[in-house]
Length: 284
Ligand code: GUN
Image (cartoon, rainbow, N blue to C red; front, side):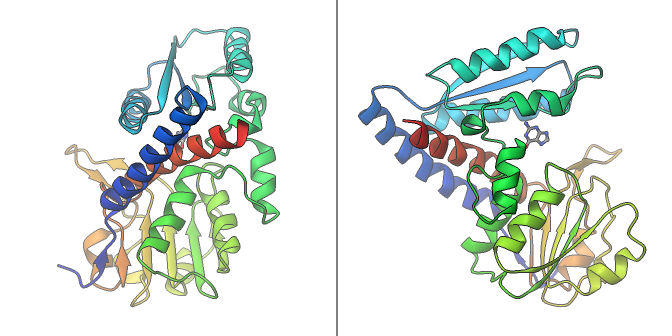
């Protein structure tokens, strides 16, 4: 067993959800309706089905009304566009989430650009991305926001530290870099063209792994005492869930580390609920 403190995302997420539940009850009392989140699933991707079900259940538990839309793989661009526009116009809907990836043939960028930025609880609209980039965050992408909240809850300082983000996706890597900069870290972002990933990780006092490849970040690369946030969720051939970091070896060296499952995953959903409350309050 490693020496690292295991960051209990499940427990912190439960606390965030309890806060949201209190806020949702207060919202419902004062506005005469619950906050509402529309979760749109397109197609039959099995992983998406699990994520969407978990998001809807979490809403109901927190006192947020969940509006469910399940569209077939064959849905037309026009029908999906019409669905998003209808949700933009619906006063009972405070948040809109279109689960990604979309089936082939649909342009996720086009759809995300259509979501009203005031209802963009994923924080994926370029307007919200731009605000985060300009140090005036509004609705913030749930996974990076969850990493920051988890660090905060454990008293892990970020200011002035060297942070390396492994992965440069629009959903996690890029907004994670913006969040870490906002928190005062010195940030390096690694991607498929990075020449020496090991050297970039070895330097880091904060490591965030978000690539979707088991074992991509080797345990022996971790700087002693570093905080390691593993965003990866990968299923092994044996059916086990593992992250992107070699957990056992990393935990021998790290100061803090998130487990998979039970680390960042639960935080993502909790921050989605929190964003929904923020959106609801800001809109009314
Ligand atoms: N697919 C993977 N992660 C996410 C997420 O945070 N939001 C949405 N909408 N789709 C995703």
